[in-house]
Amino acid sequence: MIICSNVAKSYTHGSECKHVFDGVNLTIGRGERVALLGRNGAGKSTLIKLIGGVELPSAGRIIRKMSVSWPLGFAGGFQGSLTGYDNARFIARIYQREYADVRSFVEEFTELGKQLNMPVKTYSSGMRARLAFALSLSIEFECYLIDEIILVGDQNFQRKCQVEMFDKRQDRAMIVASHSPDFMKQFCNKAIIIDKGKAIAYDDVDLALNIYSGL
Amino acid sequence: MVSKGFQKLRASWAIQVRVIHALMIRELITRFGRENIGFLWIMAEPLLFAGLVGALWHFTHGATEHGVGVIAFVATGYIPITLFRHGVSRSIAVFTANQSLLYHRQIKIVDFILARFIIEFLGGMMAYLFMAITLMIFDEFPMPADFGLLIGGWFLYSTFCLSLCLIIAPLSEISDAMEKFVPVTTYIMIPFSGLFYMLSWLTPRAREFLLFSPFVNCMEMMRKGIWGDKVVVYYNVWNPVICSAVAILIGLILCRRIRGMLTVE
Picture 1 (cartoon, rainbow over the protein chains, first blue to last red):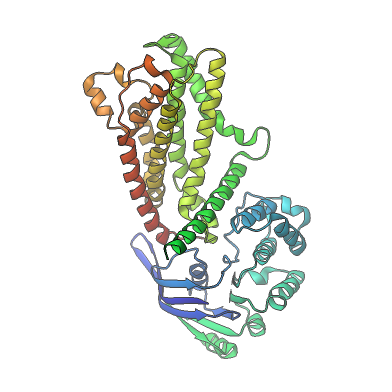
Picture 2 (picture 1 turned 180 degrees about the vertical axis):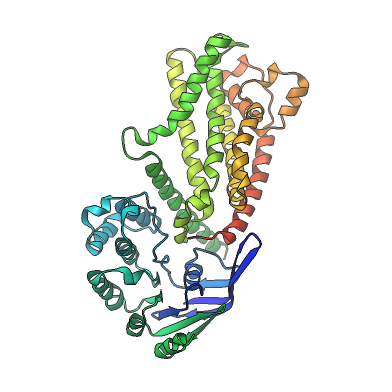
């Protein structure tokens, strides 16, 4: 279970102050697949970062009662100057997993071959997505945070994600920020609309998508 | 209840140790790569500094000064100051530089400072050892008279450096001006670091004043540890201990406050 109680987040830069959230209350249970809906700049990525503990809320609390992955997205989680293997080794170390297991899973899932010996900064976003998913799947979290990145992959990658994430790990929770209605209809069983600093949860994804398209 | 809390603390401690270990390896790979001598490069700068300045002094001041070997004297002064200067310069903007790692919740921002500092600390110690052994072969370095005092002084000196890093790292995130002032400040610090003198060579008034500096106190301890009865030293162990404790407290509070404000890309 993940509980957000009265979460507020604001950013200050000089004299400017931007309030992204103002009193968000949410509960995400085990096995729930939540679609995050919101226009550009509404705060989808910020909410994912707060839930992932990357940034801390300005007020309120986030309680995590299941293991939560780091946010899988275009930025973060990797050291660009290190190779794919070095990053895998680093992640295996800090999450206390056997490097050999992580390595073999990454090799098989990413199909990047010799590219894994190259610095991650030379990777395309699709390749990064493969690496990020492979690493987080090899660690096995109870809840995965996915920020947009799932849709950059090619057919082959999406098929693999489908098998590994949605078929084999059906019991896992997931919070996905995405702009693809098809994807959300297919995979999500709950939706959260973020608008004007508030987040409202809906149990009916179609209804949420309809409301969202009217925003 | 107590034992449960203790177990939790022990588990958290184990996680931090693992994280710092991983961060250190990562830092060594990114900084020194795997080519040629690799991470042994961390000894290179303190050694070159100490060696070259020592040689310079050897020719300008003669082989000994106040009865101690000049090369050894300069070298024992330069290696600690290099630790201080590197430690401080490495902690500037350390949170921003490592921000992509904050995606992993078990990594705390203090770990970044610790990982970098421990590398500098080990590098300094290796350089110290290497230099002492090399100079001993040429009979330019005495067998340390009191190992305990030497190591104690080195640890206190390092602890004080670390406590300053804990303050400078969060401050450098708050203000960019900090970055501009640090090189000047570390330069101005040199006369107050006990690098080029021993307190017994100075006037009583200057001595009294300089004894306020934790660096000088530790430096005197280290030199007493090396030369023993050949030198007269003045120090108070409590000065660096108290200064470090206060600075660590301030630093940790600052780090905690800054963590909430960090924006991560």
